[in-house]
Image 1: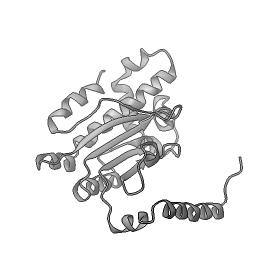
Image 2 (image 1 turned 120 degrees about the vertical axis):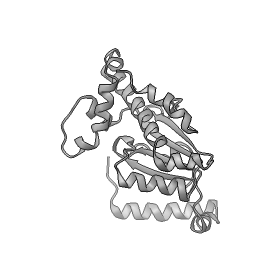
Image 3 (image 1 turned 30 degrees about the vertical axis):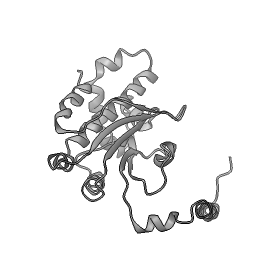
Length: 214
């Protein structure tokens, strides 16, 4: 496969902008005037998981934060800044924590690989493996274990988001805000709703039990 040059990318951009303007003459004017997305996507950096495209939304309709293995760690300033902006400034109605089956970061944690600096980043998933070891070992193949760990990781991150002070404060003030846990399949392009949904502080305990089955 021939890799496009940087010049190709710029040409692609011009062609895309022309198509957008032709299809919708007011598209870019609306984007410039206001950003009011209802959704905040927390997903993996994997290039095969394009946030807007897989749910059919245009630019401007979803606020996005991505990192390796779609983590929501309470000590990460980048994630926390984005979450605060989404909740307090944009006032999104839905936070979508979206993992994907086949995630390389999750697999590295499952196999306990040593890769360098990223080992520290993936340590919460290694903890998740220990917390759910009995369930994972009962599965028949490593692929099944990998898939399930991808789901468990999403659910744990839903918990992290829902217990964050910014989100808790929003609920205390009566905000209509729901946190969802999804997992995307690279094999068929479909999203699985993991039924890990939190829309009030009282729901957190039920979600917490899903990833603590030592």
